[in-house]
Amino acid sequence: KEILLEVKNLKKYYPVHAGFFRRKVGDVKAVDDISLTLKKGETFGLVGESGCGKSTAGRTILRLTEATEGQIMFDGEDITDLGGSALRKARQDFQMVFQDPYASLNPKMMVGHLVDEPIRNYTNKSHKALKADVKELLRRVGLREEDYYKYPHEFSGGQRQRIGIARALALNPKLIVADEPVSALDVSIQSQVLNLLKELQNEFDLTYLFIAHDLSVVKHMSDRIGIMYLGHLVEVGDKDAIYKEPLHPYTQALTSAIPEPDPLHKKERIILEGDVPSPQNPPTGCVFHTRCPVAMPKCKEIVPQLKEVRPNQQVACLLYEDE
Ligand code: SF4
Ligand code: MG
Image 1 (spheres, rainbow, N blue to C red):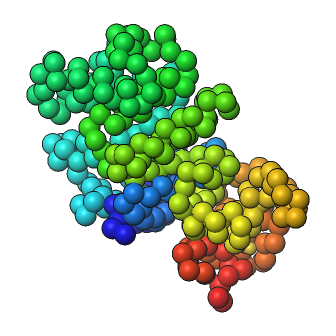
Image 2 (cartoon, rainbow, N blue to C red):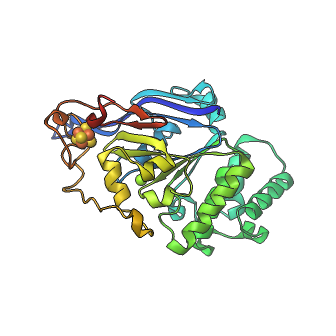
Image 3 (spheres, helix red, strand yellow):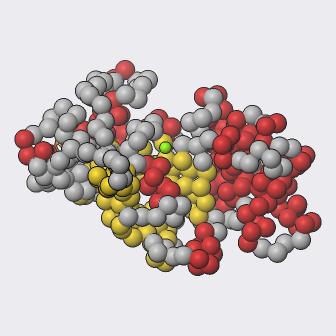
């Protein structure tokens, strides 16, 4: 399959200043050298605990924040340093759906205008044509035409996320980065919104980068999954491999926490000791070594690189060094 997005050695560091003279004392390494590739039409689930850098990675890839280092290739074009009108033009093709539909929609704007704003920014469509477009989009995301005249506060959380999705779809993008799009919603509503995203993917030919803190949320959505820990991508693989035969000790701990209805396949729950270290002072060597149940002395010194250990499964762990 054709490649839509290729991210190479992406870093996003935030300088930390302290003291009276606000001198720079270090960096928060929010994203520290990640590389990934998305094929057209696939869903890539990016999973990790809060603070692991997954949202920052998504925002950096979409050029909502500047990369510190690395390269972002989108649909054959290097968008890393695009600015001005070239960036504006490229932006039509990649959109974001945000975690919190309450915060991401302007409460003073009518739904019709929230959804048609991106189209107004990019085209000179007549009022009549815009209205027809928006009504069609509203219908498509499961809202009613009359909702055009309402305001965000008149909707439930799930409906507001539908408005956010309609807005993201307005310019017919190729890539949508969905940053925990259902984690602020009631569990009963989550699967409805996930199903909607799945339907829209087929209909609009979308590629998704789906960010989540929980492996069970991305299970039904994703073709492939990447696991992040403290700014690093530690494992990438096809969904089934990640769930059934995870290679990285961190992925093994995450998957052991997913409830398994079949008693024959029950895995022993792996409980990780300690907290995630600060991204300002990440551990040397493998960033996971302070919590890894099978860490070796060399893990404090050598930074493991992501490497293909099985077909379509890459892992960054020194246990697999010789394979
Ligand atoms: Fe554990 Fe070492 Fe592998 Fe890191 S490199 S995950 S510390 S075994
Ligand atoms: Mg986040």
